Image 1: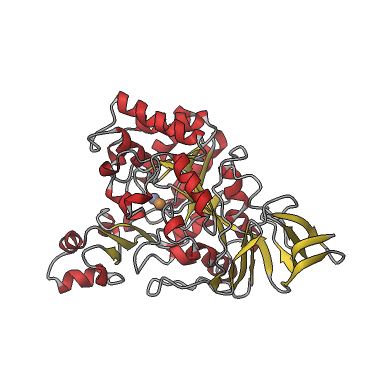
Image 2: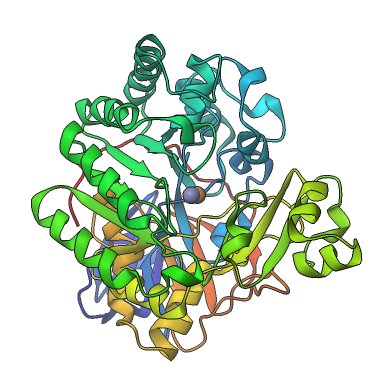
Length: 483
Ligand code: ZN
Ligand code: CU
């Protein structure tokens, strides 16, 4: 028996949550062809991995790398942490379909600063990914704010019946062309002006395709309970599976609220299709004028168009230098993004420890001082929260990053080490794995990641991208599951 390459003597963590076992993994072309004791196999390349773990490549279910697939095709901020598949188009913002570029909300311009990276149809976006091939696989949701910008003249209003019909028609077309669900963002303008009825209609359209409704909820702070209830209403009325993005309880007054929100999610999950993901950080990151500074203990400027030199500075220090208050400073920094310290460590840990929570980075790679989650999320969970805090086993953490998102979003053949599956793999050292990125120094590769493979080709090795770009656009190829 002969394979293209064999990873020898590793601890295999297969992504299902099963205990690790020693063995070899053989890969030919883009597939895993054998696992276990492969002493009698030969290979074109032997990779010694004693003392290392081999796991399925991680799947990041929530990123904003829609345009980065083309502007940063090596996707180093993802491959350095072992991520081999991303899901784009989150929080209501996707760069396809865009038929009226002049009408786009500002957040979309932050995801794709170059208008050439907006696509009139999802099919055109999908084709571009296939043609230009980034280093990682990419699936995509269709954003509500994007749909609104296509269908509406006055984005500050609730959609009229005719506008909503047009939004659903565009969504229906995009889902037929391969998008894997709809994302809504009623927290952000212009989706904030939407009614629950609009959200339900979008859910109905996704449900017709057997796809998910994924949401950055209307509120993650003082009214997070009401926002969860609205999300459940959408699920109930549309019959669509709903997925709560980057679940958090933001703001000092709301610390500890996950003791209430998690049982709510758990109860609803017993009745309907509900899921969630979260990030392993007490700070969030979004547009600087989101109002979050009022609830934050500290704000770091991530990016400012008029003042790029201030990226990485404390907002309060800049306000003091300018003899103004936070509001005044924000005004002068726009358009800008910030990093907001608004969560409690207890909530972060409680949400992550909940058995149905998957891990996401919510990364946006723009600017010189991004949130460290862009580069460091997955190694942080495997280092800090598995090895140091002991929140869950390594096998369980890997499951949250692999088979769980694959099953949730219907990415067949991904997320497991199994014969016949795609050879998306990461080899890492469980004793040293950790994020390199910090709030002070956010663009740093992770520690302890040896090698990363996508569709059987090596994309990252010992701190550097290899230059290979074997990624593919992914469609939903399996039914969506409750996980
Ligand atoms: Zn979001
Ligand atoms: Cu997001």
